[in-house]
Image 1 (tube, helix red, strand yellow):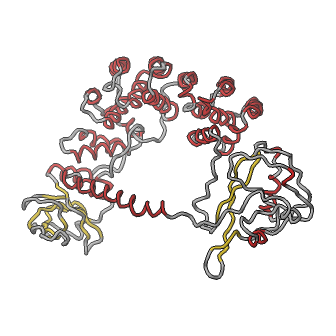
Image 2 (cartoon, one colour):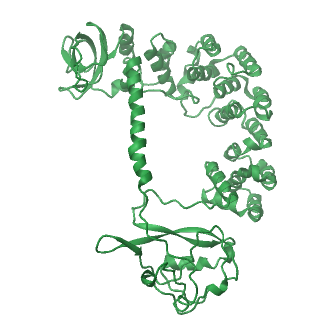
Image 3 (tube, helix red, strand yellow):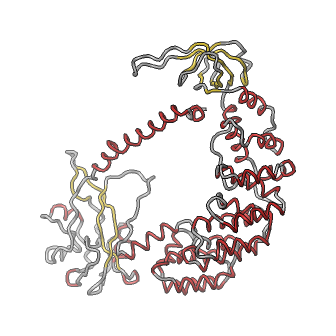
Amino acid sequence: MACASSTVCPFCASINLTFTDQMAAKDVVVAAKLIDAPELPEDPDADLPRATFEITKVLKGDEVLEKGMEFQALLVGRYPKGKEFLVMGLDPPKIAWTTPIKASPVLLKYLEDIQKLPESGADRLAFFQDYFEHEESSIAFDAYDEFAKAPYQDLIDLKDRMNRKQLLAWITDEDTSINRRRLYLTMLGVCGTAEDGDALEKMISEGGDTNLRGMDALVACYLCIKGDAGVDLIEEKFLIDDESDFTTTMGAVSALRFHGTEVEIVSRKRIISAVRTLLDRPKMADLIISDLARWEDWDATDKLVKMFKESKKENRWLRVPIVAFLMASPEPRAKEHLAELKKIDPGSIERAELFGGGFDDDEDDDSDVEREDAGVQPQSQSNSNDEPSDSIGFVSTQMVDDDLDPFAELEQMITDGRQPTRAITMPSKLQSRHKSFKVPLVTDMAGETSSVATLPAVAIPAMTTDEAVTLDQSNIAAGDEGVADLSAAQNAPSPSPVALTAETASAAPPVAAVSPVTPVASVPYLTLKIILIPFLCSIVLFFLLWSVVNGSFQRLIF
């Protein structure tokens, strides 16, 4: 069985750093017993006193430490003298000790043993699988984390040393946590037999919250054992059935993705045919179009094009993923379809091109569609890495039909700093939308912000705050003489209209006024600083204190 270099459990993640990782990051690690714990001070603002410990065993750093040496460290909680702890430190000889945590003889023996293991491989995992459900939670967590971060190939090499009956017992136990169940299912997928496959098939067929916990790993394990023959049940139960909820359906899809990319047990052809059935469920279809492109299922092209044409307002989000699919296709017919679909919905083509034909921006696309349907244009966002600048925004009009937009040339002139070289002919009436610009502010010698800074002497589009306006050609004139500098508008009486030309500035009524200079409102930001940040800090402190009370703080610090 071929496999990719994924982790042992692709359906679960490591929860914490392992003991091995933590010990590797420290200079010294010792077992020490408490010999003196001073009373806590009455003053709550006073520093906590340091407890005194005696080293009983050196686990790391025997070149600078030895048994019987004493040291002091902060101790959280009250413990009797003689209690044994695990303590780590940095930077000898003046060692900075971490907070001690309770350590049983079993844990200390466990820590000694793991230092003797090979750094990787099946022999290392064989040791940890014996501690999966250990009574000491810190050891059980560590064993789980060791498997979660190991390469999948190590799990395959461990196949002959797995206890499949014990794994199945843990899988069927309702008290097994969902993360551990996922790991056990992944392991059973490597070592399971046909008998185990029948047991999993029964669980899948019966359904229910208990049986289907860790749905993705359950289906992946079942298919590892059953192969192509098992896909029929998954397809019928979770993909074709409209009654299958989103969570279980996506769990099945995740399992099929695992088999389509990580292992070669189920044929790619069978996986594609199963996943493609979701195209008949419009609410799920957009989630698997990228998979079809990844697996080069170009036979789905005609169906996707048909879906694009038949899509309505309620499922318009399908269009951008379909366009991205066609962009990824190397077939000549894909380009023909793109040209055809562009006539139907040029906006979807533009959005797909904007994201480079990617498949991970569907939510953004949906929001844009919703904005368009509501008659609201999304405002451009400035790059967070840009240098800060003193500027204000103003709004100009943009034509609905970009091919007839008389402002396009004017906008380019603003960008290039050029003078108009000919008269701009504009239609008598035109429909417009908003477009945001930024104009730098000017600060006078007194340090006060004045009006809009002088721009190159070119015409700029008229401003409006209406969603759609009608501009009459009689109010707009464009000549060969150029236009007045914006500095003239600064000295004009309020409301300081933006001059379109020098000749008509006084005759024609103002089209729009320069927005008054207003500093960016600071009230929301102050509210964030004064209210939100302290509130978040109080939540963090609450959970920290709570962890100290119930004892989980020790593992957190360790």
